[in-house]
Image 1 (cartoon, rainbow, N blue to C red):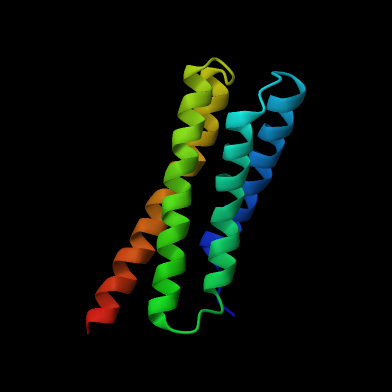
Image 2: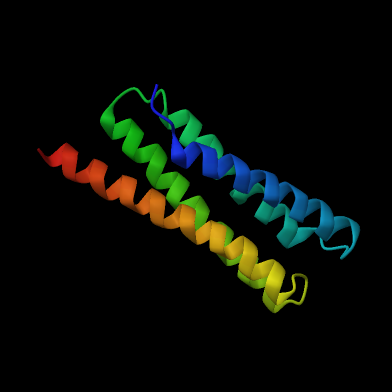
Length: 119
């Protein structure tokens, strides 16, 4: 079976997001944005996993497109946490780099799948 790079990266990212969430609630006492970050950051991998057994190419595209939206939302929460001084510049950039890698990967998958559906 072919390695699923998106799934592998999303799982590693989700683990980092869970650890960030734990840090934010324990050390920074931040409960609102951190919960949103946890939800969107872990949803990416869940949607990629769901897409593995999509009912059709259109269903696969739908799930991957939602995963892309969740990755974009995660980027937003990371930015808010940095701007609110809950994350340091280095903490932010380390997570944002991985998040943007997922965004680019998912955008490419969505674009390729859309092109293949039109054929």
